Amino acid sequence: MKRILLTTITFFLACLVSVAQTDSIPSFVRDSLDNYVNKALKDWEIPGVSVCIVKNGKVVIMKGYGVKELGKLETVDENTLFMIGSNSKAFTATAIATLDAEKKLSLDDKVTKWIPQFKLDNKAAGEQAIIRDLLCHRIGFKTFQGDFTYWTSNLTRKEVIEKMGHIKAVYPFRTTWGYTNAAFLTAGEIIPSVTGKSWEDYIKEKIFTPLGMNSTLALSRDFPNAPNKAVPYTVDNGKLVKIPYCAIDNLAPAGSISSSVNDMSKWVMMQLNNGKYNDKEIIPAKAIQSIRFPHSIMGNGSTAFNKSNFTLYGLGLELQDYEGRRIVSHTGGVNGYVSSVTMIPNEKLGIVVLTNTDQNAFYEALKWEILDAYLGLPYRNYSKLYHDYSNNKNAAEAADRKKLTDSVALHQKTGLPLNAYTGDYFNDVYGKMKVVIEQSELRMRFEHHPNMYAKLGALGGNRFFCEFSDPEFGTAVFPFNLENGKVKGITVKVADFVEYTPYEFVKK
Image 1 (tube, rainbow, N blue to C red):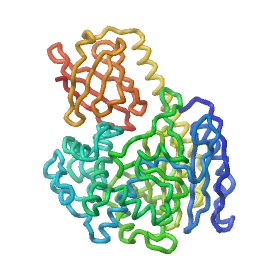
Image 2 (image 1 turned 120 degrees about the vertical axis):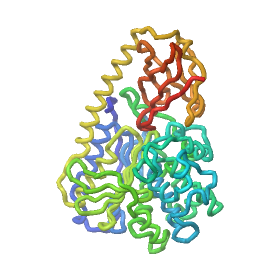
Image 3 (image 1 turned 135 degrees about the horizontal axis):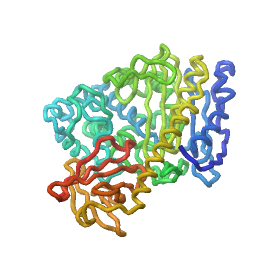
Image 4 (image 1 turned 30 degrees about the vertical axis):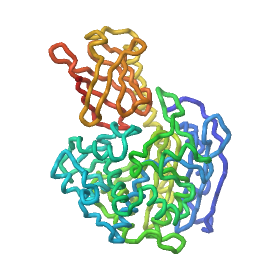
């Protein structure tokens, strides 16, 4: 996946905090974890990783590995902040389930009771949607549908909710699971209507502060100023690159939280203890039970080595059976970071893995390795398995990209003069987009992403190779659509990391 030789500095920050006997810790965790993670840092080219394991209400392992920023000596420690992405969703769901337990709202309330302006393109679905529908991804949208419009955009939360009403759902209402970030935003915006406090103030007051999660930040705007934070990285054209901090407070309840393994250990221990931490109830047990109750079917959940009978979605949490145990988990990904939080309630086991590059699958590989170790299963070397797969996939993608860039370098003749493609374009969901000529090439500029552009390299005819200035939005081949020899519109597709669904922009 990555080709830059990375020198990592591993620092032993906190170890064996638990008073548990050494022989109760699996040998992989006790003897092999450091070597396993250090090798992965080099193989995957991950600058920094934080890992925490809790068992039976105690911290077993809490460590940081590698560095916060390449080229600098500051090492990751147990208090280093990483953005946790969609692991924020469990906080939002827990907060709302707490309001339900306190009878300040009902999870079965219609969304319009609290947000009267909420609408969906399917009028009946918008009128019938209840809070549970928002929290379990069953409003009919395809996974990530609409996210290109919202992701790191200049839209406000109110505008995002309004934009949802323009999206034509792929599935009938309540029939199919489709991961919807804007739905979680909408759910989070119910909190101010009920409590008079913003989502961020409410979760800080009701969750962060009581748990002593003193370093955790609710909003992405505060993250760049944090003194102890990991810097974000991604891969662009085969090279690991530092990228700007992700600004997604318009989707905050879906993914804006930043935290450390120290703080997340408290959150996980509370979840595993049915809402109690240090013998004090932080969250009502009813709320914990609510978010773990199955609502949507995701799939059969099979893993590389073990078959699973189901993967379901509760409220902000995935539910899966594995080797006769029930796993409660979620992953998170925002620009420059991916993370996983995994719990087996019956085993009182929790695992947190935080990383600061969004182009690795190690955060999941390590989680499975630790799980298998605690369940007495064979060592699998998931990291090698995932890395081999990623290498093959990336090699194929690099070959495809080279063919396209080589074709662009031939300066192929376009179907029409360049100025025929320029002008104002519109998509009902996204809004406005312009095609202009800059530096003798076509570029696209987007209304809601003013700091981003996409350059279009001619592939011959009316096809162009698109490269976004923000690498998170990827590359693609865009066809201009013609009618009677004139440009009618263009099909725009961003990276799957942002959204799977293409957008049709019509020329005005």
